[in-house]
Length: 422
Length: 124
Image 1: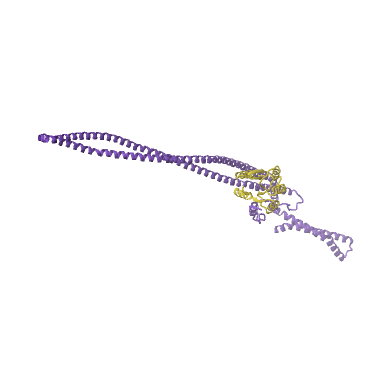
Image 2 (image 1 turned 90 degrees about the vertical axis):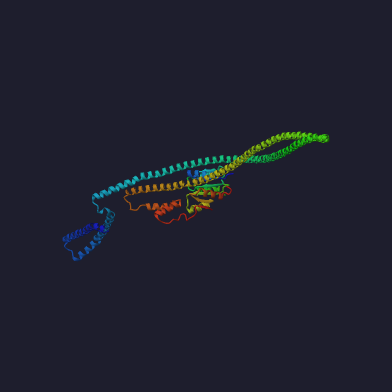
């Protein structure tokens, strides 16, 4: 303001000088008139002066005051240029012109940015679409895999049932076989024991035969001695000689019987040995039956392992099925997250609208410079444009972002939940 | 028999993602890109068990569609859910007055969406 006053002072002085000059010219004009007429009185001078003051000086003062006010406005508006010399003013005008041209070029700039956003949105939509198609293919493959798995589950269950039936049948057969083998083993063992007892009995007869044979030999020797004594006794021993002969004959027969019994015992012992060999062989074959039992046990174990494997297969398949369901859940969640693209698209489309608004507003600013009757006020300003957006937002997040930067309070959402059933 | 859901949205990605996720959940899905297409489908004989619609769409918006659907014969009582970015209280109230069953503000997680749908369609 002080600078303005300083700059207004020459103008004010010039205006005062104009008023004084006008008054002076009036006075000189009046003096000239009175000199011609030479009839004027002092009272006339006073009246003339008052008349001049009323008719000319006061209007002139009013006019000059008005001029002064206009000059004040002009100086206020041009205050920025007040201290500038001609070069500086020229430079400022050039800058102003450059800004005007640049403002006009903002159209292209903003249009490009607008299209950049549009292109990005289109690209993101293409990519998201491709992503969804990929997820759909993944889902379809997973479903096909699941169908194959389901069929495998059914086949596996059927196979398990068949296997379980066969295992039960085999177990029954094995039980019968085991019982039969046990009976056979007991029978063989009994036979072997009987043969062994028979052999022992036969072998126990051998010493008796030897005793009989020895007695027979001793009896024969006694009979021979009795015959010799009977011969020595003559007629007195004739009867005794007959007895001795009979005893010797008896001993010979006993010896022959003992030999015969011994021979038969040996034959019987040979047969018993054969039977013992056969029994031993049969018992050795019992070990072969043990091998068979071991084979049966291995088969049973193998069938049990197979049954357990089938159950394991079913467990694995059930796990795969549960994994598939979990995968489906994740896919559904992923599809839900894709909504972000639609949310982002709408926010960016709003920014595009704002860019167009900004472009149009800037262009209007350049047009304003050409108006000769411009009053210095814009119909629309960035402030009013920004405030108007508060009523255009669809999302609470847009309002929150706006208010976090521009300040103010939200009245749009009232904290209602994202999911509301009426 | 699978329940049928009519998805109405002008966004290609929204239609695709909703169709995929709802199909995975075992629903039969019909689609329309605006309210007018949805009305045409209903008139053509499509009988959805539920309509899931956006609000701001070209040609015919969701609110206008809800009002027209409710005026169609046989369409007065089946559920209509909105799935929209619109969170304005006045719009919600308008939707409720027009006959919407519920108002879901995007983004809604897939599990939450299925939970709401199964709540509205028991046995689905």
